[in-house]
Amino acid sequence: MTEEKKNISLQMHAYNIRRYALLMGEVQGQGYIAQALGVSDMLAVTYFHAMKYKAEDPEWEGRDRFFLSNGHFAIAAYAVFIEAGILPEDEYETYGSDDSRLPMSGMAQYTPGMEISGGSLGHGIGIAVGSCLALKRKKSNSFVYVMYSDGELNEGHTWEAAMSAAHHEIDNLIVMVDLNKQQADDHTQRVLDLGPIEEKFESFGWYTQRVNGNDIDELVIAFDNAKNLKDKKPRVILCDTKMAKGVPFLEEREKNHFLNVEPEEWEKAIQILDSNKPIA
Image (cartoon, rainbow, N blue to C red; front, side, top):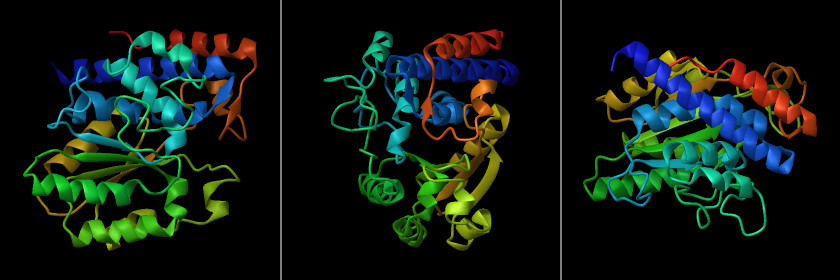
């Protein structure tokens, strides 16, 4: 496959992930839709370029692991699970319903493909360090990928885990941070200024890259760099993203951490997304 065709393929996966997220959001009429739309490109590259897994066997021992630390982004994870064939397409209709395998926050015991329960934010790196050490003891060549949000970097135990990862030379860990600049209470920088985030991770001993998280080409290069690095250190990809990417009238909302969308707006959102569908 040429680089151009690969890019188009990944764009198509990202489009499908966004569409499934919108369809699930319509079931409840609300949710963390803006986050899902914002990280769809990141998830497309993670699942359809970087990771190894078997859709028919989500617990295959040789798989790479994906940890959703920001558990409220579960709607995005379900969308990529459907796109990857881990979940059946029609299951999106049960999103957030009683007895559904798709609760509004990610729960490992309910959903095939969901490796950890991420409802208590900020624990992803700490859990991943233990998993990475266990994989090394088993002589596995698998990676652990962790999706993080910028708000989670306010948590002190995140940085304890970051120190631990560098100390133990955890070179099978790739963390991607969604720098969407919002959290529940306000703009991330106004809640707690993260400071020079790239330099901070570098000072903690991490291989650090910062990219446009909505640019497929930049993401592919960053993931390839992270996977192929020979240094024995953890890797982080800082991804600047646009909340509600792909649906301009939602992008423009001042507060879109948790979106309430009017019934007629769902169809409008999908129509806008479809009008910009990548051409294969």
